[in-house]
Image (tube, rainbow, N blue to C red; front, side, top):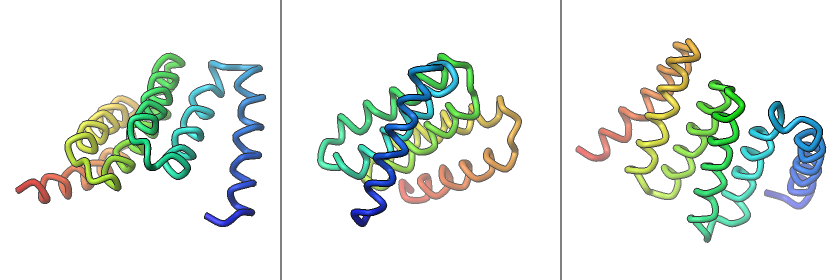
Length: 125
C-alpha cells in the first residue's frame, strides 16, 4: 500500500474513532473491523494480535446485534486466515459468517461464503 493510501486509511480510522466515541453501539463494530483490516497489513508478522483484532470486531458486532456486520467481520477473518495459510481457522470463520448470513437472510452472501468453504474443503482432500 502506498504512502498516500496509508494516510487516507489512518484518517478514516481516526474519523471512525470519533463516531464510535459518540455512538459505540452504532459505530464500534465498524471501527474494530477497520482496525483489524489495518492490523492485517501493518502487523502481519503478529498473527495473534491480528486474530485478536478480528475477534474484537466480531464481538462488537454481536454485542450491538448487527448480524450482517458480524458476518462481514467473520468473513474478513476467514480471508485473513486463508491468506495466512491457516485453513482450519479460515473454515471456522467462514462457517460463522455463513451462519450469520443465513440468519440475516442473504442468500447471495451465503452462496459466496459456501464457495470459499468448498474451495477450502477441496484443499484438505
